[in-house]
Image (cartoon, helix red, strand yellow):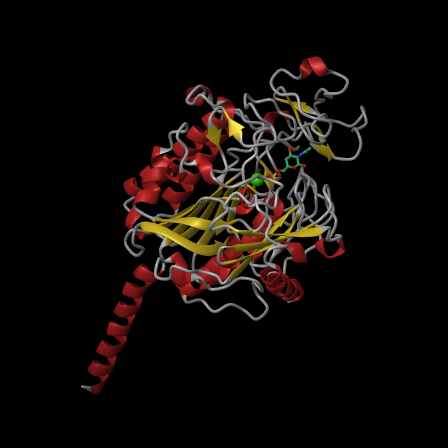
Length: 513
Ligand code: NG6
Ligand code: CA
């Protein structure tokens, strides 16, 4: 009798545990986009770009109005998302080249490690831009030091950016479609000697006529691949070159087959789109979809990708048990790297009546709100009520937040700056983080502290590319009250010195932490 009771007890425990698994282990798809601004999505105010699929995601999900990428450029934002450490603490967390060494140390705990520890299958499909290898990269063999060494079971990546060589995909560390008799050589600092084996590509400086699609600025004037002059030189790998105009479709195909093949297991998939980073070369079927040139058209293409993800989840019958997140790595930019892609105004706000950063000022490379305040939609109707949240939240917080969601303890020293904001993430807390730090390098560089609607900017000299944050000179402070002045026009440091000094000391201690 006792034995039967004992057996039933164990059985009920197993049953409950398996029910629980279903609820607490949704699949997670993070659609992480490139250079999409706060105002680029319909539901965030874009009138000239139709984004019905992203809007639908927001309508049945939780839409955040004060969510931030960690930085106003890609590599540091992705670093913080993956590691839960503020990027300014790592001097190497700056825009990386296509042959830069892996930025994340193999012992650092990552978002992928977290999901793996919680029993998930993990994958990344799309842009990587966090470095590869340990100093040298064997493009013709097995690349060591890839997302796979950081907790991803599967990776299919663009090594850096779509404007940087090598213009090939890497699947689990191997160049896709590479032919052994056309080896790849990559160089960022000097031209590749003529006698190096492999297909030669024209050099934009010497063969300007080869540039049939996009001519870039000085830095984007090396190898011409698919008619576009890129950053960096490459030779070889002709059969492996990606097609720029098919990139979104190719990546979506990978995403779909990954989801199909993993429909039975909980999975965490980062779909890191190349849209809408320059050079913008939408597939012909999206060209002319907006009156805003290829930048707008690329947004429509991105929206289509989101629609395909959602459609596939439904077809597979796993939509109910999947959390889909949509966000961006930094604010918008019209012309990046000098590519002329049909946008009107390079530096400022207005592109034919569209304002990519909405009411906020600036965008990519800038410490104003437009640099890091990005769309964030969290969609999981079964568990998270639809609505709008003004909670303050950083992508750096995702790691600890997911740890809470998964009830997965974090190892000591993991994700040092990541805070558990699950109550805000799931719509139960309206405030979110008490403070948040923003960072920017480039055109309006600095660090900023947000506390509620207050914002203190610590300004650095312009063009501080690559210089560690703790060595940057502070050339001034600005204080804004975003509730009254979202566009950061009226500097209040003189009129409210008390608030300025309160925030200054919070920033100093947060930096030292
Ligand atoms: C910059 C490039 C820019 C873009 C950026 C990375 C120049 C002048 N600018 O160095 O075109 O590639 O790097 O963008 O070359 S990001 O979204 O990945 O951060
Ligand atoms: Ca970016």
